[in-house]
Amino acid sequence: MEINTRIIGGLLSAHILIYLDESFNQEYDESLLVVAIGIAKKILAAFDTPTGLPYERINLLNGIEQSQSTVVCIACATKFNLEFTWLSHLTDDPIYEQTARKAIRAIWDRRSKLNLFGSHIDVVSGEWIHPDCFLGGGIEGFVEYLLKTHISFSDEKEYGIMFKEIYQAVKLYMQKSDHQYASVNLESGATISSKQMFFDTIWPSIQVLSGNILEADQVWKHTARYLALSPFLPDTTSMPRQDNAETENEYLLQSETAESLWHLYAATKDESILEMVFELIDRLNMLTRTECGFASISNIVSLEKKDKTPLAFISKTLKYLYLILDQKNEFNVGNYIFNAEGHVFPAYDTFRTLFHPKSDDTSTADRTHKKVFSTTQSSHHDDKNDAFLAGIKLNICPIGG
Image (tube, rainbow, N blue to C red; front, side, top):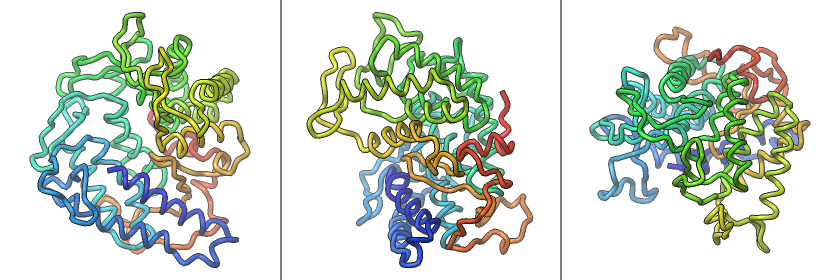
């Protein structure tokens, strides 16, 4: 249900950024927040299931249609907590955060004894439909949002604990030789497939956010070896790559590689990463540019173009490449978290969840917040450096090596 990360996330991000800019907020009528609330209220109906997990799709006019499948992918079911926690923070209405947290806990409670998860689940029965656990397009989106919400709100502990346990399970059961990751059975940990998906390239970004910079760099170097053999990464390929490897040869201008390069360069200032960025920009210009813009590649061998430019190319790929080349940009030097669609959310120590887990006995009154933000607020513990590195420097996300 990308309406949350794309539309609600964009509306909330713009609303918040307006309040952080004194030249705009005096005349702003909060109309963006009003629209975001209206959409969020409509999609709350998707969570009205026995498990609390949402249907994958909802008709904004008519609600859940009778023909709607009850099967949802794990990322689709769980990538609400960042935006919905912000909605509760801005409106003083706990329903949004509670709804997202209930869905997260529903998935968490169905983890295997290995702390692994399937890729698809039935929202009515709560049974795993596909027992394969993999990163890109699978649990990656789930753990990304656990970590980013944990960083974004200074009192959020539960998601951080979940992230740490899942991360350790990924290393133990899914990480294979040479820092490659396989698809495994959630119950046994046995390898199901050694194919590597393009979306796996987001993993170094998550590793940097969690403090595992050395390991992120090692994973990226494995990816760089693919790029030495091909102008772009295909959607899927075997690992290690072989000349006769079975592949899905599309390249849809995805952002995952650019996002990981952005995080890695900010964390290491490694000149070889910057060289790879320039090389990637050259390849995009020479091989995907058209008269009207940029086109996806239907086959990375023949370099045949498709008549399609994905939205993510503009909202994420170009954005991350630009930020790598502008290190003094506010979104590099300030404290910010980017959601799954590249929308910006600030991370300050005054931002707290509206209703925290019951184990926290802090009074409810201490958890509500003003809608208007001060431009002089402190970032986490007065750290005023790299936005996405706040968790590393302040031990907010002590995942370990």
